[in-house]
Length: 474
Ligand code: AMP
Ligand code: SF4
Image (cartoon, rainbow, N blue to C red; front, side):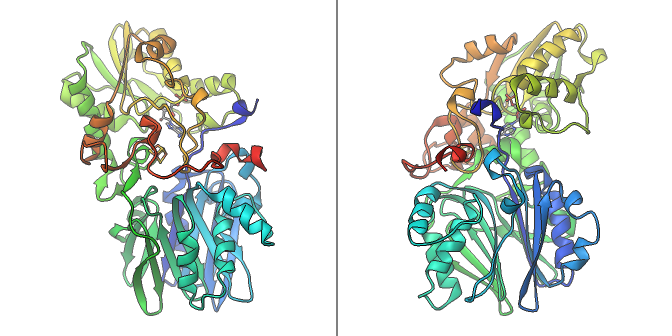
């Protein structure tokens, strides 16, 4: 039952700005551009005259800020988050940014990722008297900062607290004096730094900069803490950079095609994945089609390289929510049906190559193969622009459990049989790295590939819990 209730967790998106009179308004636009990273909660905190002001709620950015809320958020600095929640993380108290008021100074925090030693740290803090208000890992950081009160400078307290965390985290913190931005030592989650006139901005993805007319400067480095205050920007380290391991699923599925991560454009990387696939397999077919929206880039690449014409074989309804948050397999299958429709004129009587970015449970692929055949396709060849997903993610992307991943413990032929395709091809891990533009040496390649390979870039603690399992341990 629990397995049925779990959804596939999309990550969160964070945004921060320092030094602009319209900080809250800009944060709103920034978060709007990051909406694809989380649709269940949104919030903005601003700093004005030594106070932190917060507006947050459940729902989309434009639902949370549907009235005059933005104008109430005064100040020249802001942080914000769009959030996807697991079952356990629902409720307004878990919507970020979280605000902590204390005699030693007020603090607001928003976070993207998953701290793998959070349960351990939380237990330790609770034994020392900390009382937690939320289920969120983010609160652990706030308590750790508070605990290092003996350290006089706030930035040193933050550094000390950050150095105790393990896993994936991109943090934005707003205090009465500064905006702080931190990236975990492996750089697992994307976090970019930009400039908008004299103001500094940070965001999970650079598409948030484009919408506000900011210039992208660089990625926040692994193990780096950036402090922005009235004296300007200072970069410090809270930990030495470990082997870089940016999440590969960002390139495969999560990030928006117009974003760049570490200077690599997402659409271009996906297109190269499609081209690489066409080099890795030889299929005789009449048309190539992609599953909207995340697979279109790869489908174009496959078509260009194979010479098979690209066609609009599937249409997506704009007005249906995400498939994965449907509570049961049966409802999820109906969700796919409502969301996608085949273009009969394109596929009828044709041998179709259907490109998708990934297969998780197999629901989407199976349904689409059936749908295309019902619309008259004579053959459906499924081509996946990533390797088979076989292991769970411990870094904030709730790629379910092994048992829910269709490819775990199965051969490609067995998966093909289950989705009833005429052929099934996955991109090789080497091909994915090459297409992203990293080294094709699997070790120290700069990318995390753990959900494809089972090799994790950080320690995984014995008490590490997957985001969706947190309700079990507490
Ligand atoms: P499934 O039907 O469970 O195999 O899901 C496959 C679809 O989910 C693909 O078309 C992807 O675009 C999308 N997808 C891949 N990874 C995730 C994730 N972690 N969360 C939500 N959707 C995903
Ligand atoms: Fe991304 Fe997969 Fe690594 Fe998780 S395990 S961070 S989804 S590449």
